[in-house]
Image (cartoon, rainbow, N blue to C red; front, side, top):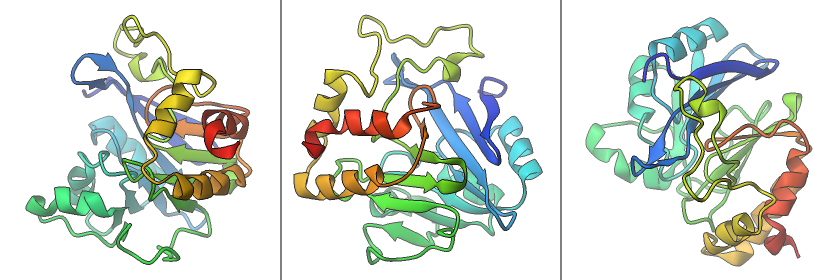
Length: 241
């Protein structure tokens, strides 16, 4: 996958690494890691794509990687590679990832779902987080107030993944199905069906609504550059009504 990822600065100090990825080898979902240069110069990275030479070069240019983040129970494939390359970085993920990575001897410095709900991990001066305990994939949403950006993995999709396939020669369009955007009825149905605890979901959806963000960086699909809070409220309308 070297050379196939589109790397860009979407806002000051916020970089995305948008890569091709097909679910089951058939459905183009796209994958994305996000790196944020914190106010103290450290780098926080949501690691969800391969650590290619180009990705590593850009991360090393940004500054010392101090935080490696696993955003939910299924975005854990590349945590070991990042931790091996940046052994001094703190690795924070969800409890389910700890079990899945136990055979790799990976040491975690914190885990949503295992730690007390009010646990502070050390990056909260720059990035807020909300753990969705009632979501099937145990996702965490993140908010970077300085750039008015929300970052998430499987809580919201914005398909097709045009940018993520931009260096492959493929359009990235989903066969037959076409699109999956926050404004579609099927997206509302999709996220509602993935809520295993509706009351917990209502609580956490409202927490994110209260964040003042314009941009959403999803792991799957194109970045939503404006009206992100509106897109979130529309996607999660069934939890808010």
